[in-house]
Image 1 (cartoon, helix red, strand yellow):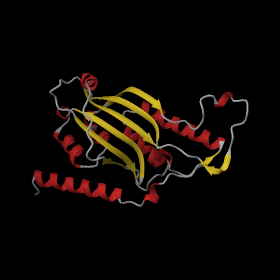
Image 2: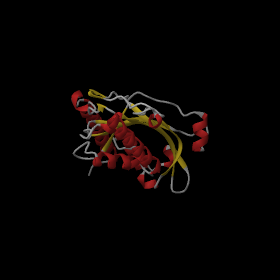
Image 3: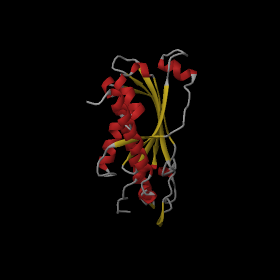
Image 4: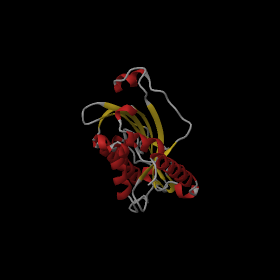
Length: 233
């Protein structure tokens, strides 16, 4: 039987190798799908983005919601999220964040920044400030040594989310598109250019006992739309 230290080394090695394999995937496989620059396509994209945005805001787990999205839109053969750590990045918690987490200046607060991937597609870039003493040793070990998404690692706490902020970073159509007096220009022969970041959520996570234990910032990426556009345009 392997010792706890041996299992820890094995998990750490697995996480490192998995991150290296993901990074080595061909760049071409990570290119977004080509959506035509037409009014109908933009309208479809607007509906899709707003649907996912609403689903995430209503959900207790962003991880589960993204995996369901990945399965519905067939982004990967296995609709499972992997959290690829962004190495050598640390952002200290602000005084306001410590106040929201209800911890003193001396209480350790850890930081984790990851890309949440489904197959080759980056669905979001997530930052987590969490209080390790409010997690179990097993949860802390998963977060420190594996590519387990934060939401899955802390499922045992039966967490729920309080949304602090939500904002759209890009819209396929202008805010006044529905009241325009002229038809929206369509260019079926062009590919619609989308930015990487589409919308952002900031939330506070609580345990079943109503104790805050983490603050998250999630920036959802254009990879959520990496599936073929409908053909009726």
